[in-house]
Length: 456
Image: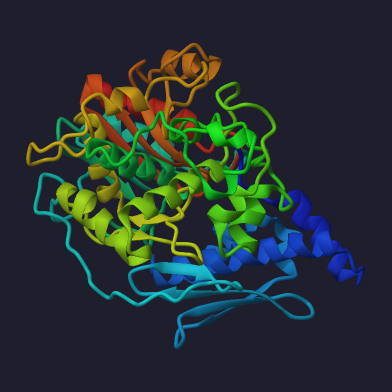
């Protein structure tokens, strides 16, 4: 499973250092990372998802940065300017701004301008477009849904926001938390990595990308650079060999990449090699950002060009309505972390992989064989190419299968329990999004729900 994306340990150190007036630059950077988390997430959840800022702080920000750091940070939401500033005890530490069509991004030195695009889109009138919410019709499935949502005072919180179950192309059950419905945009976190997979598949279909060729990043063209042999497939399969750990620390390369740098992909490209590619699976969002920069270069037109490409080649063809993709300060899609879509639209995305990359109109979006390749285990890990998988020999995969999640199953997954489960043999897609606590982020209840849906 993906590593936790909480930053509690080192954010606490930074918070305490600032509170007692100790001038420790690394500790100050840790608190700047925490402030960046707060500014970005409150901005996006307010202006993209339409959620109440205080609730976002309590349910999303505090679990990620910890209560000590959160107590020293104060978000200020301006609905007039559609921006969020986060101040510490002495100064403003972070600011994020909303641009229609492009969501939120941190205001950082080096950001290039974005031009607002207020265009809105409606989801297609398809089998997933029922008016009203579809309740579970059978007691066993309803009970499994109850178990996913129910909170228990002696167990980690779940805070499940949405579940949609699609079987044989139709919704058989769905449920939403208070303040969320079938139209509410939901934050993807690392589910976005599976969207990066789709964009690569589209380019591979058209011959614009060869996954087996070196990425040819400009930063790696020096004589004898050991990173020069890293391929697009190495990056998608998280076996690049880059020293870009995704750790539970505000000092980790990925945390600094996401919350202190306008050019996220450029920061990732500067990460040194610690071993040759292809030897070890190590999950890191830095690999994904390098792919997203390459995709944007192939598509052209900066953030607006990437948004138009995604709408034309993927979202419109799947009938997905208003999907927000967020970009870094250089116009690179942050395909490691930031997509916002409704639960039903995430289900439409999952159905593309259920149907072997074929669109509802029968046309092929992804190359033949791409889905099977994507769910094939990487070096025996429970991860394929942009998806977690039950394929391969790993203990985690075996545990999931033994609990009722079939061997051919795979899933897009983001921290705190954002997931799209896909089971081709059962014609089943389950979308489950929420702000659940570690260590399991509710996955046991999810797998029991999968088993119940199969028995439906």
